Image 1 (cartoon, rainbow, N blue to C red):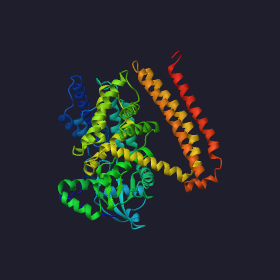
Image 2: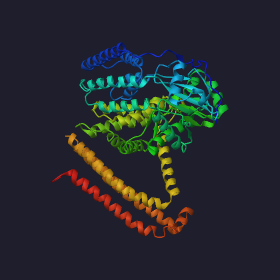
Image 3: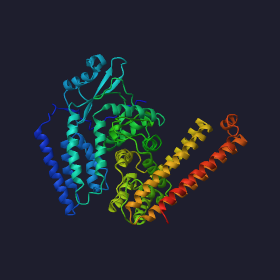
Image 4: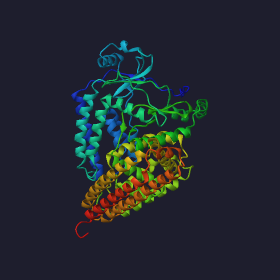
Length: 579
């Protein structure tokens, strides 16, 4: 599994180690002054209707990198709002990086021993004093556990970073509150951004979150055949000890591809690495993490992806792991399924549902524009010779987002976690899958997901299917009630949007009809298999559930009646008296 080394001619320089910078009132006041100056200029640009050009974007990126800490995370989060910022501005902010400056080993040793409650030598038989990586939040050392002799990565938090983050969060709260009153900016959900940033603050300064994320994803990604390092018990709030995975960073792979393509081809041949196979694995595992596990790596940039022999993958650094509201995730899943099936009207209908609120506009006209952008993207996706970014899903979302923002439709900040992962993953996929057809790849995922779902049912037995049907009927009622609540809000907000509400009602009706057909078909197939005993598993289950078809036909009809009754009540309630 361990590949040979891959060293580029521009070998990475060792981490620069500097004394710790002490916090001061002068520095804090300086930050406030620079921040207020930036906000003032931004307001003037908006009042004059001038776009935020590349020169200003470069200046702001430099300012944020100087501020460091939580500001870099906030800037990276803001770069995802292509509906708020110009493409050039967003791309510049997406290049934000922490300054790779470490702190002295004597300070690192003191922090480690404070967390362990014992001398460093009692836990580690060997410890590299110079860090192998560093950021404004932490630095990483390579070491060897005394108890097992295993190589580990020791991530130690920079002293005082929690206080610095708390101060930055206070200043950020002031800034975001002022953004509400800027011309043309009030309709953005700044409170949600503040909430997301607060969550980042909590997770970044407490490594127990990252340890938990790593353990959970190590378990779920085992089924994907993606390796995740072990977490060791000596990890604490400010110290994280992980298995050292001897792989090649995707960032090194990409750098070698730019510098010496022939050397990279030789390395791939020696280690049996197929770039296209690796790219497809990355794409499919992200979709599985998102739609099947609802637990995904939220920062899949090239520095967090490791290449192993035989086109295998390992992922590291789970400080940012995402989960989503089940309803939002289902809307996005159906939207992507529409893309894979080239049913773009359906894809856009579900895209609209990712917005917490819709303005009183002609929704059908906006929908037609977004559908046209999807169609244009699908035509580009068929041409392998076009540049990757013209065919990428990220570009599709960017073009659709431009149409949405023109009409003041804002997608939720929760959805931005997914967008962030797409943005970081694109850097790797562009090199691994330059000729990709994403519609085919999305379609391949959904076919595989369907097979896995059927396989899970077979593993658990048909008895579990009956239990799932009972649960599904209750879930359907809850979904209808939730959708009804959302549509009430839409009706209240949209003076011209009654047609859209009718559209969703039509979707509910068609969903009920589709569910009816699917349920009856599923039980019909199971009954047929029982009668003919064509499958060994089904034949064995006949003795366990002798009267399955007769008992559950009644249940199916009852569940169907309940579903249709809820739908009719929902329609009547939305119509109102005399509607």
